[in-house]
Image (cartoon, helix red, strand yellow):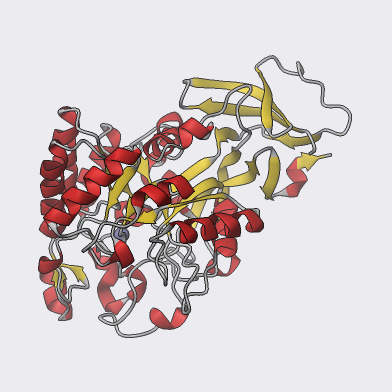
Amino acid sequence: MSEVLIKGGRVIDPESGFDETADVLVADGRVQAIESRPGAIPSSGGLKVIDAEGCIVSPGLIDIHVHFREPDPIHRETIASGSASAINGGFTSVCCMPNTRPPLDHAAMIEFVLHKADLAKGARVFPVGCATKQRQGETVADIGTMARAGAVAFTDDGDPVADAGVLSRVLKTIKATGKCFMQHCQEPTLTRGAVMNAGPLAIKLGLTGWPAIAEEIMIERDIRINRGIGCTYHAQHLSSGDSAAIIRKARAENLPVTGEVTPHHLLLTEDACEGYNTMAKMNPPLRTRRDIDLLKEAVADGTITVLGTDHAPHPAESKDTDFAAASFGIVGLDCALALYIKALIADGVLDWPRMLAMMTINPARIVGLDALGLGSLRTGGIADITVIDPDLPWTIDVNEFASAGRNCPFDGLSVTGRSIATIVGGEIRGMRALDRAAV
Ligand SMILES: [Zn+2]
């Protein structure tokens, strides 16, 4: 395996608080040295040099909410294309959701994902197992055996675990494994037939509205159910600003509750659905300016600690149809970093160290990847590294995505900031602007 020298970048490790201009030497899959004195590491021999001047050198980005679809007879995304998309976007580790067909609800399916990910040689892929058998919400899945096979968390994402009794059993079973439960927070009796945020725009468009309380009451209920159980509980893709207030209160009581946001819920409102734009059809739906403001406030004050993508590729035909019939969701991995820069750094909500914490060590801790040595950047540690040019201007073009999905409402948007190198276990798996590098 070749040696790599990442030279002259701003090295940020949110876990240790390190933030200095330094050279990083990588060999044998590990970080061999982080040296602040310029030229202290000689760039001779067979060393591959990445010129990182003006760039940020971060622990590899981690996204704990992606859909890679495989196996599935309809979807085109695969574990290979999805993990290539992750690398293209600067992500070195992702957690894939179990709502495949068949779903990831037993150990053999977990092993299948790990095997496919191994062959793909893209980002590391950590499977999340179903919370209930066949995602039916009725019988607790074989959580113990899936955990032993390598599942890092459990969820029925795409659907909630709606039944309170089942949820209670799910949380107790997961708690015994030490893993995390991720809830898709949606009270289903309030969202029958719903396709966009409930309100005047839904009425004007003649579409069935999806109220924010469908999310809020499920989080509130789950926190109550989990109070005596104490399982690690993660609320996925928050869309309602008032959900954040519920999580803030729970965290103030030291309950094991975390929350996640996605780029689209920070950048777009329900207005994007005007003209029956199916690219703006999301689950949970895009909401209002007030919700965006409250979610950003919750990111700024540390209530929400994880940035995800909910990367959800769909075949073109499932978006190229009536709004009511179209699929929910968008692809995210190829462009999420630039969108987060736009939503959070350009807007002054976060600085780089705090934003990177929400994309590295914070998500790593929730699913136990920190115990594997992921989510941080330190001498002797695993060399999963993302080099980011924070000033690189580019235009989002879905045709350049490594994902098989093209469904993205940000197509054509001018953005700033991009990963220029993605290194997994010391191996450069993604490299952009090769003229920056000299061998
Ligand atoms: Zn979901």
